[in-house]
Length: 181
Image 1: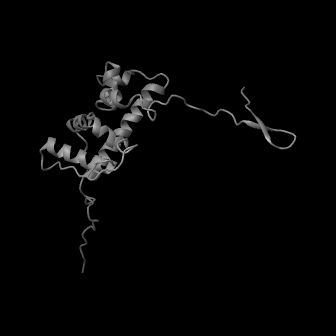
Image 2: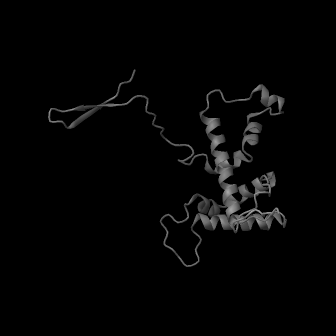
Image 3: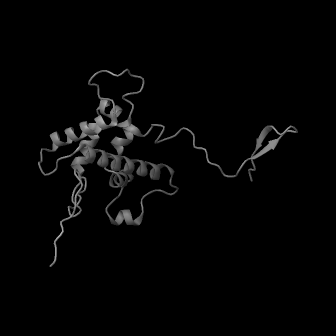
């Protein structure tokens, strides 16, 4: 006698057989439009609570931002098959944010970054097109975040060699000596 088992699904989790869908170009655009609203960018980046006293009903956390993003997306999408939850909004935003940061890093710090024959074969003829292919609406996100310290730091310290510490006669540290070759 064979028993059929049904897959166990945790509450709030999708069944393993359900395929994940990709974020569409329209959804990326709506996320950018949401983040371009000043109060929303403050919520998403965690800057809304800095230096402010708490007031009843005030939205200050990233969780509030993800709920607001989900509500915004559901209002704009108007598609019952594409309902966003706060956790889905968080997941999609964080994936998009990581894609933006990776694109920014590659553009600004990779030696020899530019158009290749492969890009031309795919119909990418300008750097703007390449940036857009790597991260949808890259230019708009870069206008918002490109000069932030966590994206474009003022100083980058790279350790090439280990410094040696010189000791005084009494054993106290007197200087750090770097072996620059």
